[in-house]
Image (tube, rainbow, N blue to C red; front, side):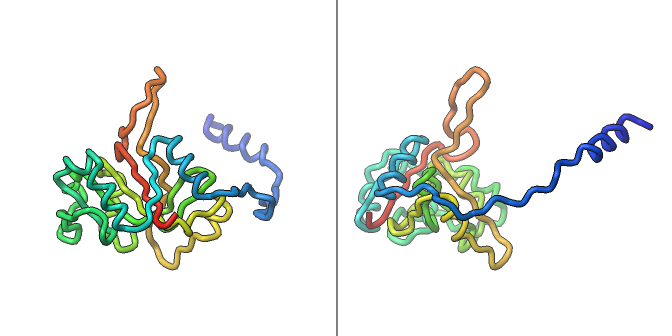
Length: 197
């Protein structure tokens, strides 16, 4: 018997007993102020969260944000926030977005427990926009913040094939020398506008 068969045989003989999945019912964490908890968590992972009264207030803040002021290629999928000089529908190859400076996109909902925002590719031709842009803005309604991940998972629905992800903070990585690099694999900054908080 060769070594591969020996290893596979040993794995078969060492099968772990079947265990039922844990119940999703439980006293999950909740927060007296979900919005503040969410803001604190986004800040702690390197994001820039702001509560704004409405879209106009978000636009006014964005006009003062230095990376936005110097951006040359901007895509916005949120009416009233950010200029839009990139026609995503005309882009056939996502690689052509490699020099996208700024993107403004909606988030479906947010999670206070970990500062994450659920995003999808519905109404977005190229989902790479979330990750290829230099600076990312996500917009979420204050009443769409849930306390915890079990509540978040309960909201997820996939009526058809598609893309969805939780985004929390700008892209980060750290090497074995413990040097933290922001923007290594994606956006260098993340701004989150919480509307109506």
